[in-house]
Amino acid sequence: MPNIHFQNLGPEQWKAEVMLVPFCEGEVEPALHPELDKVVPWLAVAPALRDLRGEKDELALVHGHPKLSVPRVLTVGLGPRNALEMDTFREAIAAAVRLCVKKEFSSVLLPEPLLAGLPGGRERLVEEAVCAALLALHRFSALKKKPEQAVKGPEWIALGFTGGNPDYLHAAARRGENAADAVSMARELANMPGNLLPPQAIAERAEQLAGECGFSCTVFNETELEKQGFGALAAVGGGAARPPRLVVLEHAPEGRGQEKPLIFIGKGITFDSGGLCIKSAAGMGEMKSDMSGAAAVLAAVAVAARENAPRRLIGLLACAENMPGGRAMRPGDVVRTVNGDTVEIANTDAEGRLVLCDALSWAQKEWTPVAIIDIATLTGACAVALGRGVAGLFCDDAELAERIRAAGGACGEPYWELPLWKPYAEHLKSEIADIRNMGPREGGAIHAALFLRHFVAGSARWAHLDIAGTDWAEKASALCPKGATGFGTRTLLELARGGVL
Ligand code: BES
Ligand code: ZN
Ligand code: ZN
Image (cartoon, rainbow, N blue to C red; front, side, top):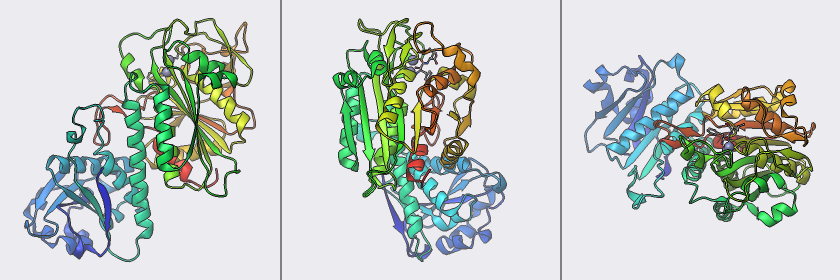
């Protein structure tokens, strides 16, 4: 990742191979942007400008003299001002940075005073611009023979300021940089194939990050899990040669070791074959990312700890491989969960809710949380209902739901609320156990959420995020190559950064 630095001494001192200049539609008129005149006075007389409109997706390189401190401008069209959304802004910045990569520019300048005139709020615009610029550069190249040659991006990206005391804007830029780091980390984990990232490897990565970022990490192996009563998690991992793990992360700022923690729980199925209820071959490969929830939790906690976020956080990664081995759980089996309830396994492919129910119960046994948020690639039904652009949010606490929607909305991770429809709880009744792990196909995302809800005490604040549709991109965009998206990571990081819930 390129280094981000600040040029604080005003436009006359700015220096870079190229400067990005955003324009809204109909505003490609240097006279409308007095700041512009100070940095690149030549732009006002550049004939190329006459052909530009500032339309969405319009990118144009305009050259000044090569000896100038900013010899080029890359204009970035944003479309009409009154329709400008943060998503468009992020995509536009990312597309511009991609063009800079193609042109092999070694340095790029983002002029803060020109961003400040756009709708969205000054700090947010800086944070999002930096985050988008960095995400545009991230590629999953860990498995290429020569990873260093995968993308040759700029060596540095600078933010240009007018002077004064832009400390709060520097902080916003650092938040953007950290957010991009977290998302990249989550993508890196979720793109990693099942053979290379079994539960134990997630645990080891967590331990390594704990050392680097300064949080604590405890790993429960299969023997300890059994001792603690994690019958459902153990059953899911039973069919795999590589055993399950529960990874417990904790970030406690100084003096806050005893405060009620905010708890994140991530589904960490390192590969979901479906188990004995095996999936069909088509699309099974995508199930290597069935640990996207755990990846989001790990990345968010790691970066929040590195930033020394102001609140106590616990992250639980419920990790197992769902395989059809000789010790695999069978349809019809009954297992006992951490809270003592028995679950009838109606379908071994509904394994996510099984690993999560043990983690949910355990979280409430160990701590008095301020809130619990679980995140999981839980149901194909959620993807069918909502498509690939928006994730499902289940929460009976209106204030918590709003916090989550606001956090996601601010960083390009939208959620749509689906109901925890009480009458459907009926469908989860079992003849022989306390609950069964599957309801009818219709309303599948709701049934999964209701199953989880069974394990949440009435008094606990809890939300469930179903990211089955959003965690994987079928098509590349400027902000994200094909593959894992890291969806949810920024939402959790936003919540971790925020004040009291
Ligand atoms: N990991 C899948 C859900 C999923 C599907 C995620 C597609 C991403 C893309 C989950 O474990 C699963 O298999 N769910 C079943 C549940 C059913 C058996 C009740 C499903 O959605 O079909
Ligand atoms: Zn499954
Ligand atoms: Zn799954």
